[in-house]
Length: 422
Image (cartoon, rainbow, N blue to C red; front, side, top):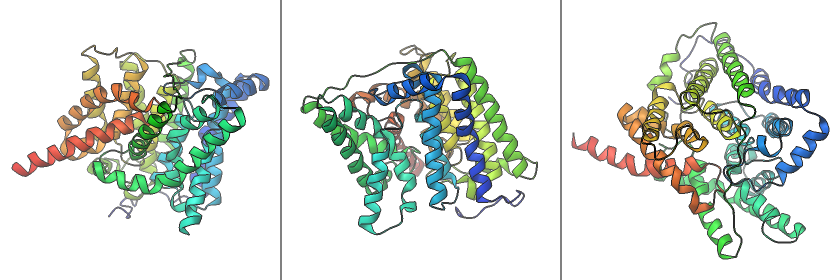
């Protein structure tokens, strides 16, 4: 059933058209970068982005400025779209989720320098196992969550620069080589109820690497560098883009929202590919709606659209092609909001807001066990994620994925045990 498109109303569009739709955002960012900033300032800002430690939370808008950040995001997105094009990969939910996650975290943590060693590691892996690179490209795109460790080794390990860069790149290659078998096995722990499985995998491996680094005298400083300068601009940009996604989806779905409610019938558990289950048109509609819901959450929490919050929103939008929908996601956000009302942490702060948005990694729990279970998962997720990053020094960008894996691995067996008793 997972491989059958149940929506027969949509207009069939070509792979080329799908790629053009995905190009809209990075091309727009590229144009805006040079429209509102000078080439000299952009290049100097990009240099600062490359040399920053990249640990959570490092907002590139504060480090490199508006133009450099958008150039970093657009270059990473465009190169990956080109790779997708050259490998002749079909545009499905996993590809969309990976691409939007890459774009999102290119606002904070993933630079044009620190991600490519993972791709080389993945390339070596497929040559060693004699398989096709397209079989693991999505996993490799997600593997870039440990990009901060590449930067740490390269520039902050206290080594001469050439040796530091070699060590950083070597780590990236090793991580890119081993993530495929690791992530496959890690998903068994939470049973597919944590959408950000790569984050759970990276959290486990990152803890080991961070312990080795710390034991070797390499200290990693936690960062909290945030920008509040571009709130209104990005709020308007995101609003326009998400409405545009809905319009595109509406047009592809034969100018109709017919069939969208079918998305609510799926729990979201890995693997739930909406492009195959309800069609691309309704998938784009779902992505746009989920983007607007995330924006409402930021508004209710009185937050600002800085780099990490924009990154969180884009990640959820991407995974709205691969598991998230309003029915299974809103309960998680509500649970985090309730946790924030206890005033242990300020609900208006960026870490709490992104915890609320990223808590939707546990959407399959709400999809399977109901609204109350989802709210409980969101509540526990907040308390876990606000304390868990210390064990890997903030080097795992998918911090919420690691937290989500822990919460799911505990809650799901409990829910199942109570279900059997009924």
